[in-house]
Amino acid sequence: MSKTFSGTQIVKALRRIGYVVDHQHGSHIFMHNLGKNTSVIVPNHKEIKKGTLNSIIKKVGITIDELKNLV
Image (cartoon, rainbow, N blue to C red; front, side, top):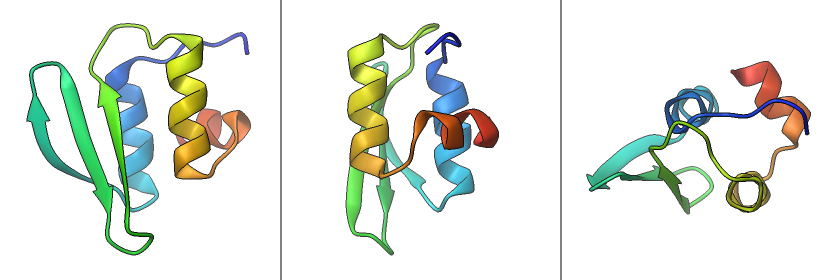
């Protein structure tokens, strides 16, 4: 995983696959997909840490390559 992602890039990518911003609490953006009935929390930071990124893509059900294509 050579490329790093920011919180806004991840939010933009998730919007493209059907997630909507539910609400924001501080620097954490809560997103929800009604079709899949899943929620994910994205920290709005300049750089998302590796473990946090892996957790987000695992919960959403996409790969890192698919995320790169969406961004």
